[in-house]
Image 1 (cartoon, helix red, strand yellow):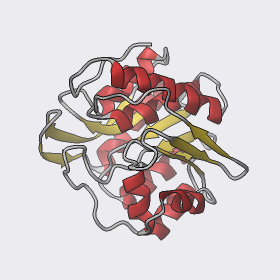
Image 2: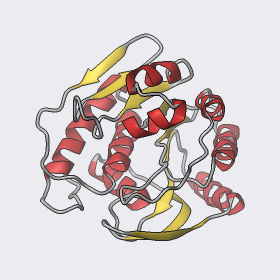
Image 3: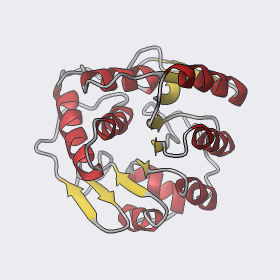
Image 4: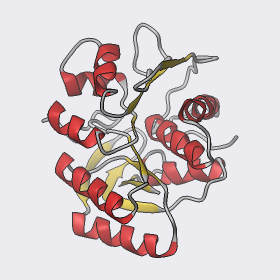
Length: 242
């Protein structure tokens, strides 16, 4: 299940997540948290979906489908995120939740400014994996070291640190677990950037977990997927294909 915003251009949010799930041969369902007004280069605004209507979508889907893996993307605030996580765990205590924190769009629209690390840590205690990029992890802890911040957060849940924004080791991603740290080196650095690439990478990890891969393998295969996605064409919207 993808719980995320609706991006009408299809590059990010629910549409990108479902495309990724289907390409990896996992059937995906979607719960909408917002309607955004954007294309790949411009973001003009959004309307949030209420928590009540989010849970109504979850309810009708779980009446038909057994959902064991959920990816959460854009959501209005940490309070609604926390309540949504609690609701999912109430319905399925064994569910694995992957949260891709989105504080700012790729077109520089700020969704969240007041980020409190204690609230993030409490949320992470309930989920399986968080997938921040370097800018987001630094924003959580207000530090200059993304690696050290990710290590701190890994005390509460697994952390996959996306390295696409790195100036030093561009494209290097890291997985921090309570036992070990894994690094994922890019085979190539794509000359093309893509709108929604963070959404795609996180949903690829989720799909691979749903296929039964262990976390480090799920992340490795997601890395392969995003590399092909980034190289798929020269535009800001990528093609989904294995």
